[in-house]
Length: 119
Image (tube, rainbow, N blue to C red; front, side, top):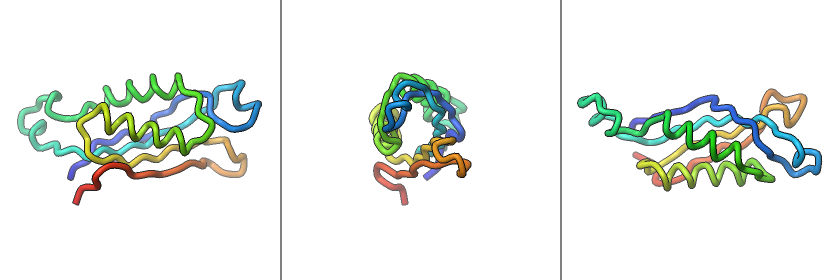
């Protein structure tokens, strides 16, 4: 199965378990891969026959910016569920990072896979 991907989608949002984190916005970074058969769109050059990374990006930017999750784990699950529900993809692989959460690390976060994994 082919993949449509979005890497490095950066959003400011309320995220964290500490009291001080609930009063500020912090950066999260999304890397998303979606299983999509791109052959029909490639042959027709018709964007309607594939998943638009622009539409997915816009939806995620809006969703994440308005969210106020405590855990990156919860945010990752909700992002994956949203993509699987709202877009015609059977499988997603998601990496959600919270750079700056651990000063000694470049980035920390979670990686998940959801849906029917393609062969």
